[in-house]
Amino acid sequence: MTSIKGRSVFGSIARGKLTFYHRDEFIINKIKVSDPELEYKKYVKAKNAALVELGELYDRARLSVGEGDAQIFVIHQMLITDEQYDSSIRTKILDEHFNADYAVASTSRSFAEMLAQMDSEYMQSRAADVKDVSNRLLRHILNCADKLPILRENAIICTGDLMPSETLLMDKTKIKGFCTRSGSVNSHTAILAKNLGIPAIVNVGAELSDEYEGKEAVLDGYSGTLYIEPDEHTLRQLEYKEAVEGRKKELLTRLKGRKNITRDGHEIKIYANILNSEELESAVKNDAGGIGLFRTEFMCFDRPAFPDEDFQFYIYRKALEAMEGKEVIIGTYDIGADKIPDCADMSAERNPSMGCRGIRFCLERESIFKTQLRALYRASVYGQLSILLPMVIDVSEILRVKELIVQVKAELIKEGRKFADNVKLGAMIE
Image (cartoon, rainbow, N blue to C red; front, side):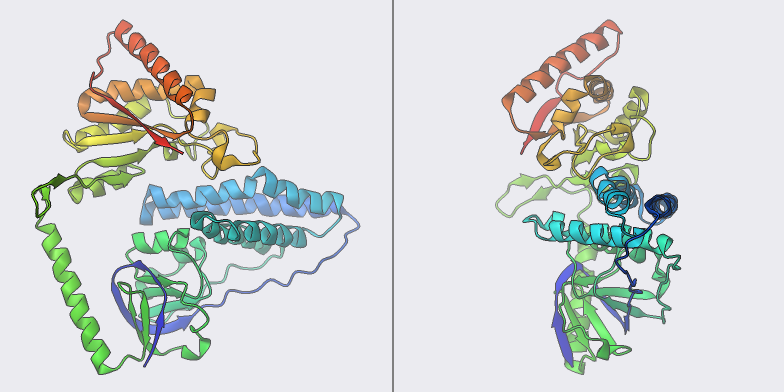
């Protein structure tokens, strides 16, 4: 028996045969071209085709994993159209006269290396998204077909790392688990695997060798361990662990509807974070004590314009009514950095994570912000609403928001519209 340790993504146990997946490696040559305009047209054609594909992937993901996780492919569309990314490729082709595939591959490598060196694990995991997007462009430039592995039944997929599109497109009816040599628990692939309910381990290292192809294995998603050809003793231990965990899940279902009280008599609230109506349904189903954060910026993606007041009012009202008096904390738009919908029309910044983002975006676009505040206060009569202001760095931002809230309330009173007087206002201090 061989055991390999990694990091757990989804707590469950999977049994199957190890199936190694190797994606085709592109052969990229660095060539000086005589007609850079023609080469640039080749790149633009590939970019447009990739954007269409990503739109189709978004639609497919929305049906299989829900709106929230489908946004991965909206982010990929944003990456392809990112000004800095696009500018780097354009410069290499039109100014330096390099071939389109080299320009894409070189830009991808630079961006991925930059992200991988950042302190934030979240930003490090975005390197996989850059590679995924770039490989999609390269496939179109080089006219290569999208190749996925031929899967046997009960397969545990083993690879260096999986890209989000690969995770989504593989035949999940044949997959029992994922195991990758690298990768992060914060990667989009890890999030997809978790929400698809597929046990997964990442970052197991070089010990995961091709020599184990076809071997029987058990993936322990609780401890993050892969057991190859486990002995009888290990199998019995894993079966016992599976039974215990199954019992825990069964017991948890019995807690629905009951208060969460510690042994020393203190009641605590367990809230759910959501992105959309599908996740709202899950929060209700699992008896969440409230909504800890409803991230509203995701409503703005895949839209030609920001959602109007009535649409937002309907969404917020639905959330408040569904929670039946439990607290619902709704965040105002946290737009900026890696969350920029097309309708935002934002220019590139040197430090986007701390630039025009969150509350600063809202205060720069007061008409958009007031529309959201109006919808929120109109919906406030249908439940217990709290409003969270994201990415606040200065007290002046809070004071300006309070001035706008006074204006919004005055407008609603003048129009004869009701709103609650007990709406709490909070801030995420960055």
